[in-house]
Length: 403
Length: 106
Ligand SMILES: Cc1cc2nc3c(=O)[nH]c(=O)nc-3n(C[C@H](O)[C@H](O)[C@H](O)COP(=O)(O)OP(=O)(O)OC[C@H]3O[C@@H](n4cnc5c(N)ncnc54)[C@H](O)[C@@H]3O)c2cc1C
Ligand code: FES
Image (tube, rainbow over the protein chains, first blue to last red):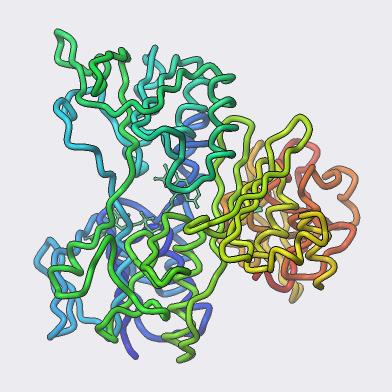
């Protein structure tokens, strides 16, 4: 294999290039990314960056890394087509880039609901550094922010905005917060936390439209039940959609992401996909698409080992995720999909530890500010319920006993 | 402020850091091999494990809450001088600090 091309220069694309070199790949590596500049981390965009504005601290690697690793990075270049017959990627400038293997790491983009008024000035989203810079500039003059969507990004932003003295209203269409990825028990704890931080949180409150003032700027939102929430900044944080159009146009199977097999290869053996854009075989036999640093990074490492070493063991990394909201660091190990039993361990003066089981085995563990339990949980996912019960659900004790 | 990193093979790298930067950030921003910092300093990954040089352990201080739990999962041997470099913030007293890197982080 002579030449590997990576589309997308985000968390997963960067790791892909780095891991190929770590595994000893000697051929050419070309990264094509539509964003300007070097690959950076997104998680701090809704956390530390909002407070400190330090963009340099976001870079995954300095420029010297790409030079010394002989990784060619073309930024500000959008891939517009994949010519599978010729094994070439076409970019917006009309250039064609031949590949022996192609890795699609195009991530996801925001998916706002189809409501009127979204193009009013003052309506913002938070996916890229450019988005975050725009929001930071506005935040100083913002009195009241309306956050549409009570998921991780919306709530992290809400906590930061409160800390900066901005009034915040979170409106969420579902009956609870973070409903896609969190147990109701933990979601309840976070609801209380955000209310204590001074955010107003409205549940069961789908948004019907953005309101605009006389100057045309956003002045709030109107809910489906007619209630109006006023604010001078409206953050749309209603989830994302995978950037899979390129793959789809090239005839690769897609269904909420590019469908890949257990080795993260598409049906075309010359093309792999990773990170937010990839849907890989999940625990219930259904394709699973994760939006996390862990998935992007572990996918990249797995593909690099396969391409360089030829190993094609199935991908089986334990998922983990974190979210910082005010003083609470939420950590999730495993996946709660299909969980059929919940064990809640209340902690005095602190958030509960929530254990979720599927078919008698540990499927996921949610903790707050409890790094030790989280790290033990990562190793104990899949452990039989009876084994944990024997240790009073003390994951660290169970882990030591198993070692 | 200066930080000296000494790799497992003995090679030394000296980098500049600003007050308030973490030792992990300084390593990553200067492309020091041997510190990964996968979680960006959120105390989630233990891929920023380091050993504080004997002469500096007092100035640097001991592990923060939760740090030892993460270090339990570090890839290389954990010693009394082990720290997560993302939890060490640069301040005047740490100018010139010497940090040893573990053999591997994964
Ligand atoms: C504000 C925010 C906070 C987050 N917080 C956390 C967190 O706390 N913990 C966590 O685990 N995860 C978090 N995430 C999610 C995490 O950042 C993503 O899961 C991760 O970045 C996915 O990596 P990726 O490489 O798949 O995609 P990305 O990092 O999104 O990179 C994809 C890149 O591809 C580019 N691209 C798309 N199409 C093309 C094209 N046709 N041509 C060229 N380039 C293209 C995009 O512009 C982008 O730069 C957060 C995300 C955001 C936005
Ligand atoms: S960078 Fe992840 S724990 Fe320090």
